[in-house]
Length: 272
Image 1 (cartoon, rainbow, N blue to C red):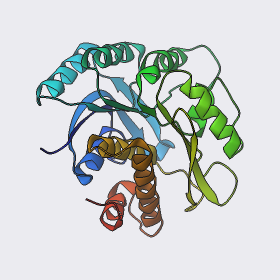
Image 2: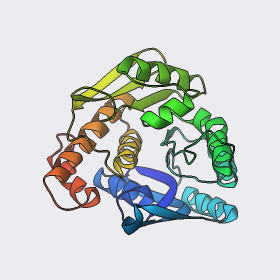
Image 3: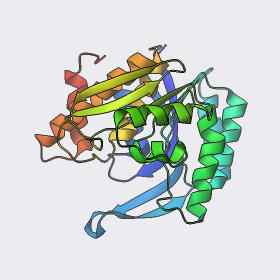
Image 4: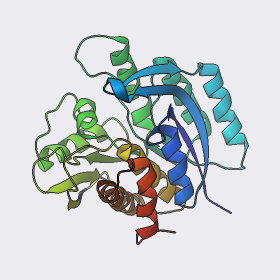
């Protein structure tokens, strides 16, 4: 039987991030993907990528989850991306408790960028309290890792490892804290905390810019691999190599990341 995975995430119209790239990644990794849409995000590239956010009604989200779960006898791998509102988080948290997924990959998309009290801050707090604790693996970037670790400043690989350990106290079994291009040095370093040890995943940096959609692709690739039975450490290594190859291809193409990462799959030693 073809492995299956379910993604709960927002729509991103360019196809380079969000549920669009999640489902592409599942397909490229040989996994049948089902999707529950949580919100619609529309970017305006002419205005510095300012965006409009439209949430999906919580009952509609619940209905989508039930439809996806009912499509196959057992769907036990889930990837969670952007949720966007406390109401959506409540619906998804209830679904996690009801369906008891074997593997839950959480890409913790935070929406609050300041310390001021706001609805966005309430959303991020709900994500931290209700979703992250139920994760098998959570994959924060440098900013998200600092916030989830309680406002920790991260300036080195040692700091990143400390943040991963701190995030693990919230409940997830594994924490993949991503340093990417933002830490100093020539290597793009991520760290994986497995509950006992820190594993350092390091590759040479490809350029110095953050790539839109790379984090979504990484988490989706991890979900696809664990759906096929791959252990979490190996899944993280495969996903990192895959995204790195996609970024390398992007720098040698005028096309956006969304159209060139497929070449990375074809050239990847783990391609299946």
